[in-house]
Image: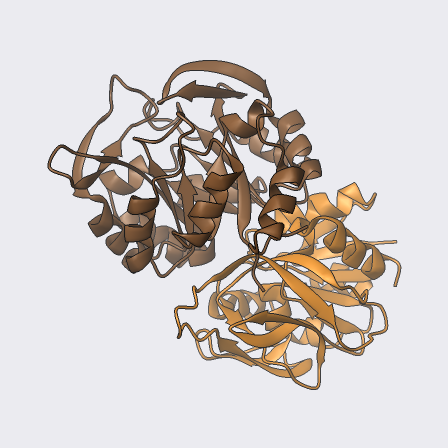
Length: 194
Length: 256
């Protein structure tokens, strides 16, 4: 099985790669369209801001490549947000494979933003391969996807937001599975077994 | 609901974990990866590694151990020590760290906070602050605290610096209250409470943990997001599973 990590310029690529290694899978880091198309599994990682990340995907001519993939694609954190139609962060259009909009976490009522730390995830809907998990996961983000038709799991922080979203072969998690201990490993294992 | 974080802090000197009292008399307590894995297994929510000699010596953190830690553990960790620019930070983040914490270099050149936030997002950028109370009753920031011979008064009021750091893009503040550090009489609740009142980003208490009640106080009375401690964990004086079970009984939300 071949797994590729799309080199979207994010800073968590190393830790996602190590998490896969702990599960016995060596993932290649690539921005090559042919390698991405040929892979059995594709991970879109990402830490940073939506606009520069989309700019990088456009510069690498990967937008259409990613949109047309039919194998399992897992977005992680910003990578999940890039799967959506639009993000308020930098007012930028995403890959639009999941019909959702990324919104800023509202910092009213003393809510501290970014949402940083371990929070409870509750599975609400099934997906072809994303593990249905309830438990603690590690989050670090200032923007979130409100609960909608594509929501697979939720989390509470001020409001309820999407901890995981999915549609068809695409799914994403807002938390960091590579840093979410046991639950994170189960999510990655489920993806690898898809 | 977001849980309160228990954060063992590992001071790193020449690639080994050390601990001193009031920033002096460092003794080696163990291998970095061994300790990191032990704390992960015990339920630590996050780890912080301070390369305490990097900043005073004007060098960047040694990336080899960052990568070793990143390969081994599946909880988040933060690295501090001598990160002076975007390139240093990128190297540490690419080695697998989840966050970088800057202290002295941010005091030397506050624009570093803006640069790091712009390059990596505020969520990666932690500003560590060593603070001590002066005779006039004012809390002020100390610089180069890893090396007593070079430590000097940075002449900034701690609360002013917290305000400036978050305006510039700090995504988290670690407030190390030096007057209580290493003596296990409890966190400096008064100072943390004052910091909390102006801090809109996550705030982590550091310095003074000696008993489980101290953690509860920091979470309940000062409303901090995380509590950092070193010697009580390294020595086994406080076991993390028992601490978390007790905090949960006390109504504090912790990851179990």
